[in-house]
Amino acid sequence: MLIPKTPKTPKIPINTRKLMKYLIRSVKYFVALCVLCVAFMALMLLTGTSNFTAQETLYLMFHSDHFLKLGIAIVVLAAAYPRFGFTTRRIEGDIEAHRTQIENAFRNAGFRLEREEEGVLYFRGDGLLKRLTLLFEDEIRVSQYGQWIEIEGIRRGVARAWYLLDSYIEMVKRDEKK
Image 1: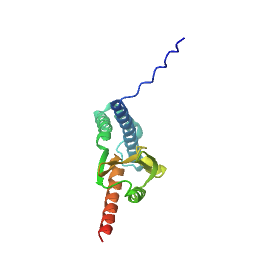
Image 2: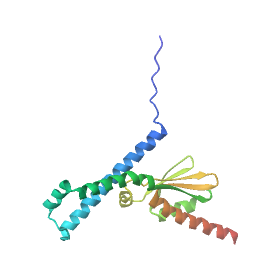
Image 3: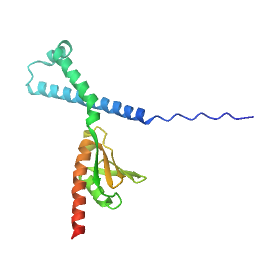
């Protein structure tokens, strides 16, 4: 008697994974922008700088086209941010040779080494507050790309770490020339 083969679970194509990640990031930024908007309105009400009461503000939110425009702006920003909020930067160097400089640069930028897989280093925000301010999109991936060290992740974190790492590697190169 033949035993039927168990069907393999289908692998999710890379493009679908990227799309899902993009959508999740967009939803996170939409929620963050809505919270920021509500916090701003609450602050205005609490400080007395608003021209309206809380009831009037709520009424205007649903009966005025100004808040509709604000809502559309929030949706557009949330949809676009994942596109320009993440980046990849390269620095000439070698991960193994500059391992100390990489770890120091990320530590000083507020990140800690979370794991290492097949020569790729993964850094995360060091602390809950740092991770929260980055909406838990704080993973930065460092890999070797030919003669380049490639840093990929959220733009703010990558820019800080890239700047520090570049200066650390330049200092090492200057010291080696002496």
